[in-house]
Length: 264
Ligand SMILES: O=P(O)(O)OC[C@@H](O)[C@@H](O)c1c[nH]c2ccccc12
Image (cartoon, rainbow, N blue to C red):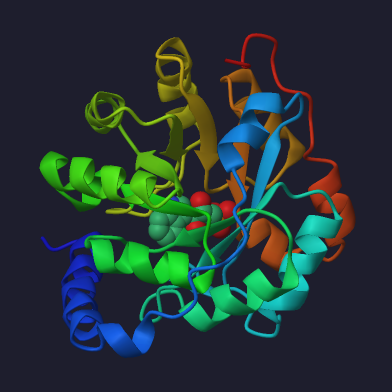
């Protein structure tokens, strides 16, 4: 049966063809500020928080369509987020590269371009829109493609968050040489969310000497504590922050000290 990930990847092929045809019109500014998320992780004694701007998702439908990306991202940084993630996928997440550009103008912190990257032109556009980090999802491509796109992004001075959901994908991420590994607690094929995925894969990530980011489904302090216990250096949180009634408090209380030994 075709999964939602299959549907997204089919759509991305169409999008990439469009981007290639319109390359000249799209690629703009390449003089955005550089921000190294990796060096933040290297120095951090507290959990790094990547706060996500996420209007909607295929699993949750509309999450919050009232918020302005620049304002929300500024609040994230003001309340202590170490990086901001911006969904740029239109069809399934109601995001855009204009959102990313608006956030770039508003904040002085690393920005993660959150999309389903399958071609280098998407990395070019992410960079031209002001991103400092790109996401590469192991489940979205063959290993050779992952190697190619990883090297491409590195050569452009971007940090790369390599996302995995099981041991097999994690082995691939480590073979590619990923330094920052995102363990997605959500299965992109079934939408099932389980923090036990971080607990299972976290120790393997740490043993390999990479930084661990626990992604998705984090709602409570108990969830954050579980991630920290599994060795997380950071967490990626979208829905909880987009729906928060008291964002300052919700975000600030997640800034827990990281485990000793989680430093590399
Ligand atoms: O809103 P949540 O459950 O806090 O999840 C955020 C983030 O992890 C999620 O948006 C995400 C993780 N990996 C992705 C890949 C593509 C799109 C979205 C994602």
